[in-house]
Image (cartoon, rainbow, N blue to C red; front, side, top):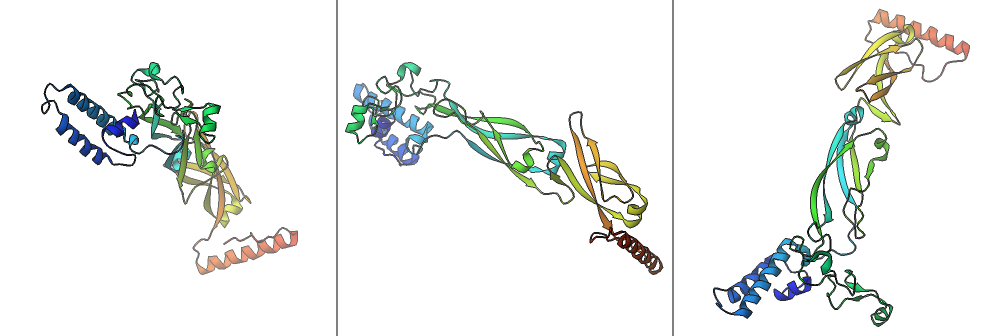
Length: 314
């Protein structure tokens, strides 16, 4: 039991592991079988000290027990790019989670379920109304197990802590629907909680911005410079996205278009292309001609009542 381990090594809650080691050495020098041959009491003291030190060394929480209930959630920060969303890449999430000890089956006792304290049913406290009245309305620590919930020696694998830790890799596909949420919830894969259920992993996305491509709802968006002549006459253009060359049409009078890109058998992206005005490099004579065309176009739109502030052609 944890309290006995502390008493055997003359320790208190909050002491360091170094102090535990120093106290253990003192007892070893005093009760070692080579120092006290054929001394049954000394041999028992030596065994108790060794058992206590090994338990504390394997489980430092005995010296510094966690405060409050053990929570089941895990937080994880994941760096992703727009390219990861574009190809729906699968990212590996590496976490360390708490699981029930496989040796004692989460009881904390060397004897497994047979070592559970009967009066408190392994809780460490007796929830008896009469005892609660005598203890200012609170459940009283079980006098038989001293609050540990077990009878007899603790489990040699977990040291009575009832749980172990394991490293796991979880594969997470980067879906478009995660972009606006920024937090992905993975249920039933977190720590084991007090009631035996498994908690949640919260994955916080840190998205690296892309100056050429953005995400809006369920499609991608980009801007392409287009000359006035292309806008008036129509043309075909090409954009490069993550090593993929995509062609698009510039229809006369249109300010935008949409294209699709099938990147795999299961993934097809929609790209919204917004046409930006491209100011061409012109000689003085050609520039005057373009200026005249622009004035005529504005005059025609003004007469038809269709001119607005966005009609800039150069």
